[in-house]
Image: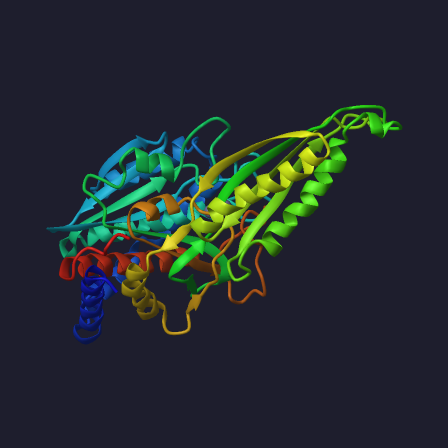
Length: 435
Ligand SMILES: [Zn+2]
Ligand SMILES: [Zn+2]
């Protein structure tokens, strides 16, 4: 352990001990005030959520959603900025005393899915639905802003509420999402020291799922174009069959994950699209294959594309074909900062009770909250939204996805407590070290 790490660990130890013995963080009076404020505003917040659900908008097109958010934040007395990375909005809440700044991020976009639920507040926008629960995320962040602004005289430091467009992706050819917000300086003015985020999860209401370290995978895109030579289907010796070669490529790509990667380190290589050939009686000249690579560390992230290209090169060249390999880095790995986790995981337990904070294995899906968490310590967890009385619920991205709205009040309560505790921690102990 280096001297610097020793000092950092000592600071964390002091922080944890003082949490334990002095119980700083949330006093019981503030905890009660949070609960009272939530109760007072829940009906209005549910109305807002239903309005958002009825009026979903796709990535980089969240204009009405952003207008609604900005006007709510203004009415709470926050300093509001709109039009960040096209439709992004921030609201800065300055506490009574100066101090550190903590961020809370909610994503705003919906999905191109036709809603099939039977709720009374179904989407009015044909083919567009909040099927990933971002309407719940916005409602929780707005509710938290409302409650925290009512408790402003108890806040030492600032809270920046960040409403982000296009988490599910942008229209073709457009930039956007968390990456674009970071580039436009959303983590500055004032500089944010730590950032919180959540995602609804189709598990029981009352439970959250959390793990320190890697929690969601990096997601990168690749395309392989195999170019052979066309000929009559009955005279294959006069051509180079791009379809036969592509099938060899696909089979051999499977051995990258099974033979070339440490089996304790999950990796996914999925081919999701293949296109080639023109007619049954013609040897195909060209095949295009597209896929996604998911990894949980940078070593594999660098290694896998090289291995894919090696396989493609070996097979195509040995049969006289050629290839073009395209690779594009997408969302980075989402990492829960271990030091921030050790400070805030106890807050989850204090809020929900032992047994309701569940470990979760890293998920191979991706989430662009990782762009924020790459720059500053991030804390991200999954909030259960399944009615515990029901045996199951439709998954995320399903046209039947229908989260339990009681999760909104609980999400606000958790976020308020996390915000108070992280501000207090940073004021008393210091900034969580960036790694
Ligand atoms: Zn989604
Ligand atoms: Zn989502």
